[in-house]
Length: 153
Length: 153
DNA sequence: TTGATATCATTTGCATACGAATGAATTTGG
DNA sequence: CCAAATTCATTCGTATGCAAATGATATCAA
Image (cartoon, rainbow over all chains, first blue to last red):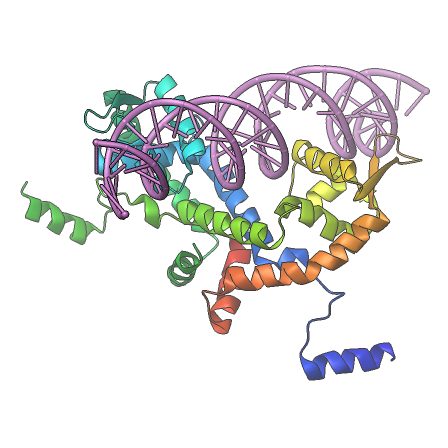
């Protein structure tokens, strides 16, 4: 079959050309790049805290004292990951840990006064980060994008 | 100022309530979750290769032999990261390395026969991964989403 | 009540991801 | 032509992110 015939066949059958896989058009690849860009913008605004660390602080501000595991669930981190994040926040005095009186398995996490001050101070910057990340889109596009992105997450 | 007055003021001035920062509505947080979900879908279909490793193989299939650094640029990885990825692919015999004859700084990377076989075999699975990642969206939503996501990446 | 299950946390091992520092080789500008 | 700047690659340190194994505690069910 000639190249032209093959092209014709593909158009007619609407089959993907199996020789034509474009990495840079795959959702996973672009998702990874968009995430990288966001992290970079975050770092430019908040240099001394990572997005996961800020997420932990912001969520603790919302819900108050919780167990480490529960916090992990709320910010989409598995137990091993959240432990590292909390360890580093504790080392910096932004959170404090205590044992649950009734259920001795649980490790309670809470903001320190310093941690609470830090979150309040950083939230305006976090708003700017969100804005800058979405800056390539118009207001209408942002609404559409956020709706669809939420469906994928 | 009473709570009602404060609300009124906010509505009039269209200022965000600085006490009301919702982490789970921020684009960075949802982007991170969407990426996590994609990686999880990837792992369910292709267990013995990570998305970055597959990206390297797929891109080498596109462009043929390139320098390690150039490959990194093409798949959005910095020099330190791409080195680790290539090292592991080399250890598994999927890529081979050679020195550039003219520019002695460059380390050339290419697929081995086994690496080429692996990519060809995996591309259909990669198509499924893309499909499953986008499954929560309709065809029209996918087109919209990809267009907007590309703008952000 | 007790044996099976489930939950919470920790640890280990592996794989991105990136900043910063370093060294080798190349290119550029004066 | 040569010194300065750039590029390519490596290494180190730190921080996610997750699977799997382990130990302690709690809950459930026969």
